[in-house]
Image (cartoon, rainbow, N blue to C red; front, side):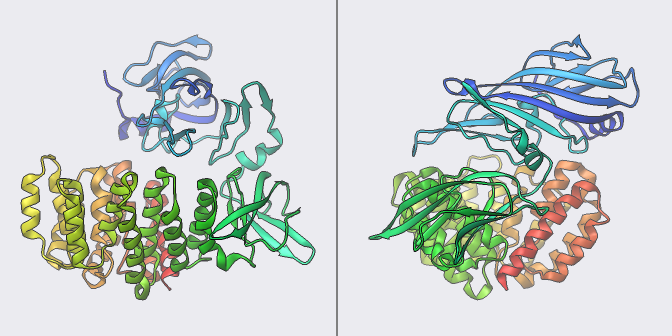
Length: 553
């Protein structure tokens, strides 16, 4: 029997029945050195408002054992462990094993060919946490989480909510004194390098004021020909708002969080800040360049770097990058920066810069497909699209992408789209055809796509974002304005199809062009009246658009 997803009715009933007090999860990653198994022991403490009632806990991993208040439970069926005869206060312990691979649900393992290292990460959207450990996998049953992670020696374990305890095989490091900072404080710290007459210091600021403790390194780099060489690497423990650090003066670039040892946003010192964007490409390792790219992106979204500076950094790094795994992510950032974050007066120039980078990278076998995809989003002239179509050959996905760009540029595509639709064996090829229509700068096409996408909800949920993003194409503001109002009209009722569609439609349909700050403020006002799932996603989209509009000037 296949695993069953939670229905809205089941979620509402379970939310009325239970209050979850806490989760304690012991995650053992040691089996990943030579195998693919992640073993988890999950203890859930929760209350039941109707003692004697029955419910279930979600667990689609292989269950080794499960006990409720000391009583052994039956095996899981269809990804659910039944919990009979609940007490007023309950303790559930489940030991489970998840299989980990590059395409598994919940937890993923891959070996990067660039460095030969093993990388593991979790992805619990939309309801994939249950594939790794037992949980009440619904957003309205929240509770504090405490994790103990056992990992192979030399591995670095990171979390977006904190690391209460990390066990290296053969040794245990007690991180209890960091528990409060990493478990009880949300948000991200900022670490800024300051250079004063008396020397260097790291200025640390937490989301609520006082920062968490950090152990990190700062690298000092100097020019050597066309490259940068690291002259010093200084490790430092940050325990307060200002930490002195002994760095050599006169370096061309100082890299905060060199070697990527902590989780924080970082900033270069004011003296080398302007050169940072160009110098990032001269850094000698993929890790160092990755830290620089992350720094620049964070500066962009916080209004501390321009789109031009960010594109300069990204295209420069892409031109020299040797790690194939980051090429497409960096290309996506470069395209998004040029298309969404740039002022209208600079957009075409920045898109051309990214397109040139893509065209150059397309000559490298390992990067070719990602580069051609990037070119399909940035080609500025019909000649470029024609070149892409020639390069795509029998690759139908790339041919659709080329037609989308041709449509955005205002070139007729109807005949080619019909012919490609006839050739495409994919049963959902009609969605690709709809993407072309969505990108077309024509009022009738926009109206028809809105009908299919929003009114009829005929597009598969997994494809809504790709269609909606093209619908809100740059340079089509006048055509988009009627639909801007239609989006706001949609907000009060968008939740009626369930929480997952509400999340997808609220986020994906949020306008990208044809709006101003007044629209953002109206969206924020509507969020105050919306149901929680809509309110959370609407406020997140509004905040992102406020940042984008600021960057556009």
